[in-house]
Image: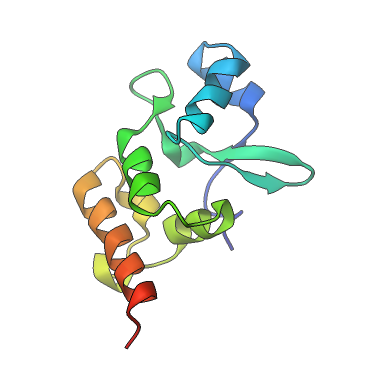
Length: 119
């Protein structure tokens, strides 16, 4: 399930960890650097989307995946990051975001290709 594989944070929690105003978090989302899903009556962001070394700033690879798959709804995007991928040898895209961002982007493009041209 997409809710169990990561910590989901409110904009206030992200802002607190990043040392920025809540408006900055919302701006990152509006700029498609991040995505959020609706959970328990509020908008939440996946912890894996942030660079914990760089003061909780959005990982550039997340923006690149969002750019590669603009038609994906937030829930579908979360499912992509959480689902195991044969393209990644059974790993989840969220598991490799920092380790191999190009491979995560390639996995998103592969998933899109498979969607658009099944079979």
